[in-house]
Image (cartoon, rainbow, N blue to C red):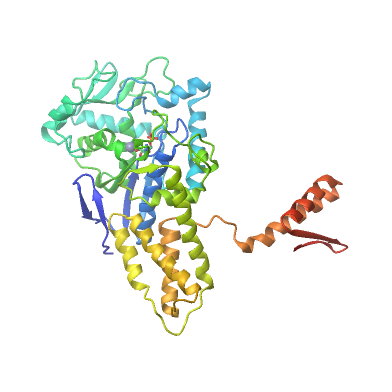
Length: 487
Ligand code: AMP
Ligand code: ZN
């Protein structure tokens, strides 16, 4: 299956034609959340971006195995150092809970938010704690190949040794000397031979909560290791796409590549895709900077800088109106504009089913459809796609207003175009309850009122009657039962 998709590959710093290793199969690994707190909107942006990519690849006919991990151990505070406390352990101690209670709570919350934002679940969602054995095996392999060393029960990756025959800065485009000169000395440095070396296995201090036996010590794996081990397990030594936020590229992904190359001799993924950051007043949204928004704060409007709330689909639309490799600044005005745009698009989509075809046509849909594919084939350019969908909406409105004629084949194509790109590719859905649902909802309310009456709970039954009356519905009680009518 030949496709004309081009993707921007951070590894080569250019747009390249996407050629999977074994079509129609595509393997995609995306670094998942660290479940020690609620995912913020910045995190959500990254997962919405990869959802768009997953959806489009699937639409093109690829059978995608999408692996997105859950980091439930090994991610230390301060990210780059090997000294800080494990983020989950720290939270567990503060809350006086088991680390796995923290993991469960935030994993469930993450899934709920992902569902609200209409992102599809990945094919596999492996956890770091579920793959300790695989990680220990990977450390053994790296040690065997001579790219790691042991100090007091901890194992470190030897970056300088690796760089003698390989290119450590392949992904971040920097040479070792430059990296050495620009790296701060971080905690946990004393045991390391070199400034850039990083931990593969860390001997646990006695107070550390999450630890496992290994040939070297009772300890825990380094954060970078889990992604190397799990991508290898589920997608093989070489697969198609590896993704994550651009902030993960300089260290986390650079170290992942080094680990996999050291162990298996291969760069794990052919295409490295990186999403750009959601910002607030130009600054990266991050928990540590204190400028992060939680999804429910955005949905309800309960946040000091928000004037009101926005629905999950408005938020998703807002995110998709920017290209995934551009930064996106969050603000009230931008949200208002997105809400208007989203309503305009969904209104037109709603009118579409009422359109009547004419014998002749004054409009051709095929060029717009071609433009939609061209936009998505150009590195998943969702803003250009959305502009094309607005053009399609304009046609829908003109035909509806009888200002434009469309014949049946073009109308069919317009239906296909809007269904495919709005629902399947952009993953947008109408949030208004369909009018068809209204009778069912009213029937349910009548049943509940009847139950209240049977229980002699006349206060509730009157409240329901009066409430419905105030919004324009009359309840009519008779011997046969109760029915409702619009006043
Ligand atoms: P974490 O849970 O911190 O490991 O982050 C999960 C994912 O969210 C990673 O891929 C990060 O790159 C991404 N991420 C973090 N902050 C932002 C942001 N402000 N905008 C977009 N993505 C982000
Ligand atoms: Zn990762």
